Length: 285
Ligand SMILES: [Zn+2]
Image (cartoon, rainbow, N blue to C red; front, side):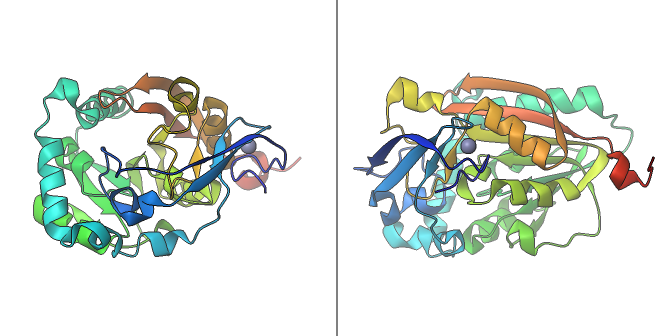
């Protein structure tokens, strides 16, 4: 096996996990379905320290929209209830409220709001981030492959554009001031290619915000931490986040490890576009 982050072929420990009950924080996709009961085997990369899922599953099949229905029977009411629960949490208990606050704070240091700015949320799920984040300063676009989630977003985000696609199927004419990927990259087997697609959609002065599960969950909680589960391809280290950014021509500007109100261990990073390299800018010696 090859690490999907750093391409190192050497592994340290290996372990397998099987969830005994649905993820209590499950919001969408496989975490909320019977697939959550499937065993998932992980390896720790000797190169970057990330822990990656050894099965290269077909992720497009995982998110084919049937995921919601497998266990709940009614995807739409499940999503509606889940969304309502999350947006009703008091700010101190809400991972999302804290995310919204830090992204707003960072954006205010980089952008002026003399005109509305464009935000793209990739892997938007039920739309909880945009629902709380969007105000008169922002115009929102959401990309999300799950049809039930998109249908839900169309009802709760009436001013946003909702695109039901995978990122590599999207060809957008415009560029964005802010692109957010909130716990999205762990759901894809090819994070570097994914991030490159995203970076291409960023304005030269734009900001990319990436939020990921942290391997610290393993060291503090063991392999049965909720972040090790069928469908989570990689649980990251800080250096792995820096690496995937660099591979996508994104420079890390701020990185933080946090324990969220829900108990999740999270790494987040704010990235800026790297200046064009000489060979890309046409300046040759
Ligand atoms: Zn690695």
